[in-house]
Image (cartoon, rainbow, N blue to C red; front, side):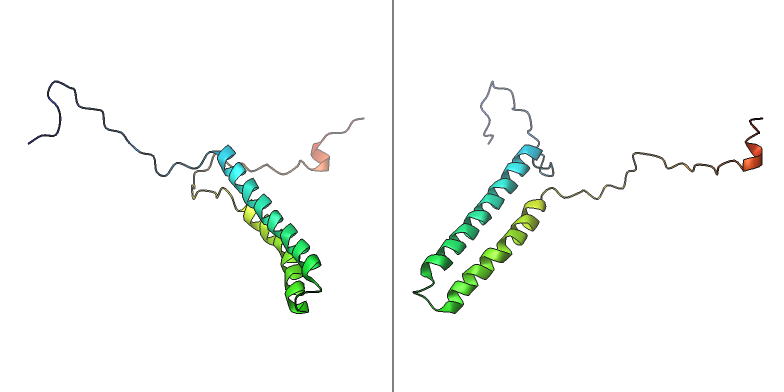
Amino acid sequence: MSTRRRGRPAEPEVHRITSAPEPLADDLARRQRRYLWQMGIRLVCFLAAGLLWPYVPMVVSLGLVAAAAVLPYVAVLLANAGRERRGDTDVFFEAREIGSAPRHDELGGGR
């Protein structure tokens, strides 16, 4: 038994491109959002450390300050870990060797 209706032509087969890279604009926007979220968390850590200093043990406040100090480095590393290079080994140029310079006596005298 067929599930197609009679009289209608078969729909064309749809191919999916699963290995296509994410568009550059989308990748950049995603990395910027991730960076801004991490910097927001850093701001919250600083504010919480300052506001909670007299109310919580010093270790907690120092931990928040340490997290706020380390977060920028982690955020930059994660923000720059965007588009990865493919493993293409195609060379788009051909390397050429430049010959050595002529000797002084081969240049000819200007006199």
